[in-house]
Length: 535
Image 1 (cartoon, rainbow, N blue to C red):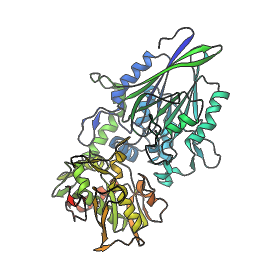
Image 2 (cartoon, one colour):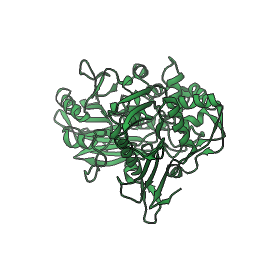
Image 3 (cartoon, rainbow, N blue to C red):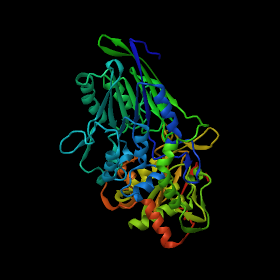
Image 4 (spheres, rainbow, N blue to C red):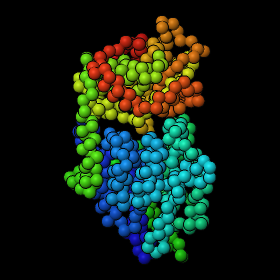
């Protein structure tokens, strides 16, 4: 894309879903990981040097996601947010609000926004009183050589109230992202007279990019396909939220891209525009995902920014808080999901103790969870319980519990040789291990040789079949309690109790109080295939 006097090129550089990753390590064991802004920063600096006309944007979910970011949120006090300091150092032009920006409350988020040397944008998160974008101007316009005007509109998945604690969203209204785009795209085209219009959307694609067929329930969580098809005037759509790696694709003539997550890639869209009178017209676009040079040193300025916070985080993570009698480590995540494991039983028991409920459900969030060794540290707690969840007790029916178990049972499928694997519904477009729940307080069997929706073959409580019309108090995390993960049977159910303490803190407090916890299971559930146990 070599420009001439009658053409000009612009590089759109962006990160998305960094989730607090700075150093290229796994905090569970400090082992190497191909992630982090310290690793990505030299590539960002080089791309800015190569492309005189450029914009650098973060597409959301920046300030939450690792023990490093968690420790700062809980213990950083009034110190500047290191994630913001890094983006300031690298010269970001703008950022978009992601759903996880709200996890630590509006005060914490507000401080991050104020510390930023760049605007935070979201056209569809509006003030409940005024109806105008809450975080300031919803778009950025930057002028380049030859009078070329580039506009970037920020949008955020409007499904956030279905996951987030209401207290963290006070005074906010989340409008439909596509409808907001229909309002603001004409403003950028007609009033701001931009030549290149970019939408940076913290959301993904609800349909197959190739066929247009739905790939998920049409909840509105992801509207990337709809934006391309239903909102005229968009040239480039930067996406995120789903942690997918997408480049080289277009939908309805719109160049689309998604740059994975955790600071692994730098997304890049190159646009060439040709002069048409006194305006510029998009002539060509191309997109790719750039990886850092593995031999390049980590960025020294970024390392300097995080040095003190990182040292404090590591000290905190290695504090011993208790011991395990028995075996609670995790070697095979699939086996944990096929038959009860002491770690899952422990999670459910702590939830029941903290809430007073006698039925509980929880999940093994990912396949990196190590479980607990004989000596428990904060590192093990945050390595296992990776989200800042709180707990809610809902009053639900026996039918709701059965429906939820059927949803969980859909996690599995059998291969041609009878091997158990994760179904496409829980792995495409991204792994959703956190949406398979395991229960305590009821006894059940799932037969995954049966059709989806007919897999709960035993569901009892106290030796008797669960009454479909009976009511039961169940404790679960706040994400699940609002129907997150396609559990609509829980949405809008009566709230019995709200425990507004992070589950990781509840776990730590329980272990500190006990000193030693005992690994045990009561085998109240199992997964079979045609009656054959699978673990």
